[in-house]
Amino acid sequence: MIDGKSIQQKLVGSDDQRAVSPVIGVILMVAITVILAAVIAAFVLDMGGSVQQEAQGAATIDVNEDAQTISVEVTSLNNADEIWVRGTADNIVEEDTSTTPNSVSYATDWDGDISNTDKVREDGGVVGLKVGDTIRLDADESGSPSPNSGTVTAVAVLNPGESDEVQTTVGSKDFDFS
Image (cartoon, rainbow, N blue to C red):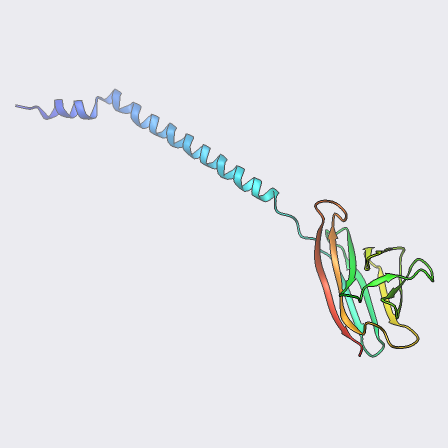
């Protein structure tokens, strides 16, 4: 007859032989967990490094359609390095070389000035604005600004001129002086 204890000992093993299997299992589980955690951490950390930070700043844009004026004031930079001011299509701030370097005109029939020695770009727009800087654009003496409608936009810029430059629109206002 077959003895159940001898079969059990052959299938399960003795007390010394059974102790090896759980120890190896625990070691393997810990090793797999550590490797899996390392792979996930490497993936997550690599992904986080490739996400660009958004430029943050604030500017107040006031449009007075009765007086035909536009005023842009930089109120906060937060993490941005500077604020740029732009317009749509032909309605952009451009350099007016007939007066002081700080004066700008809006297209051809606008008068304006910048409260600081900021940069007026050749292709239009004003760059390099800091907190407290104000741009005021007025209709000239003829009272008929051209263009007479469009959009003025303030853009916060992080790392201007560098390969990782980030631009975020922080304010935009439409105007219609017709």
